Picture 1 (cartoon, rainbow, N blue to C red):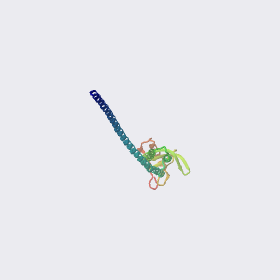
Picture 2 (tube, helix red, strand yellow; picture 1 turned 120 degrees about the vertical axis):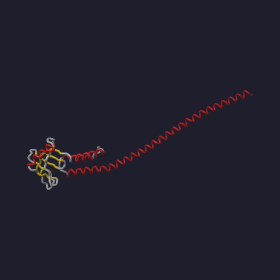
Picture 3 (tube, rainbow, N blue to C red; picture 1 turned 180 degrees about the vertical axis):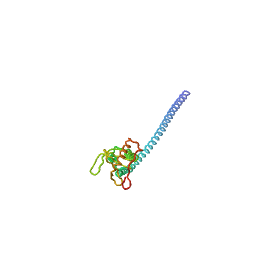
Length: 224
C-alpha cells in the first residue's frame, strides 16, 4: 500500500513538474508575443508618422506648385511688358547703336517663346538688357556705323556722350553733325566744330585725356 502511494505521489510530482515547465514555456512564449506585439505597434506608429509626414510634404509640394503656377501667370505678362517698354524706350531715345539695341530686343522676344529657357533665366536676361541701357547714360563711346540721310547712306564715325549728345564725323573729317532730339533729325555743324568732334572721338578712344573735351551742344530751338 505504501509503495502504491509513493508511486502515485511520484507521478503527481512529475505531472506538477511537467505542468510547471509548460507554464514557464507558455509564459515565455506570451512574453515574446507581447514583445513582438509592442514592437509591431511601435513600428506601425512609426509608419503612421511617416505616412502623415509624407502627406504633409506632398501637400506642401502641391501648394508650392500652385504658387509657382500663380507666379508664372503673374510674372510672364510682367516680363513681356518690360520688353515692350524697353522697345518703346529705344525707339524714342537718341538713335545710337540702333542695330545692336534693336537686335537685343528681338533676341528677348524670341527668348520668351523658348521652353528650354527657365523663367529665372528669362528674367535675368531682361534685367541685363535694362542694365546695359542704363549704363549707356554713364559712358562715352566712339563707333562706326551707317548714317542714312535722305537718299544718301555712308559709313561715319559716331560719338556718343552718355545718352545726351550724339555726333557724327565723316571718315574724311570734312563734315560733322549733331542729333537734335527735339526735332528728331540730324543738324550739320559748321567747319569750325570739326576739330572738336575729332578730339571727342579721340577722347572716347582714350587717345586724349577727357579734360580736353569741349563739344557743341543743342540749345533750345536747335541752335549750337
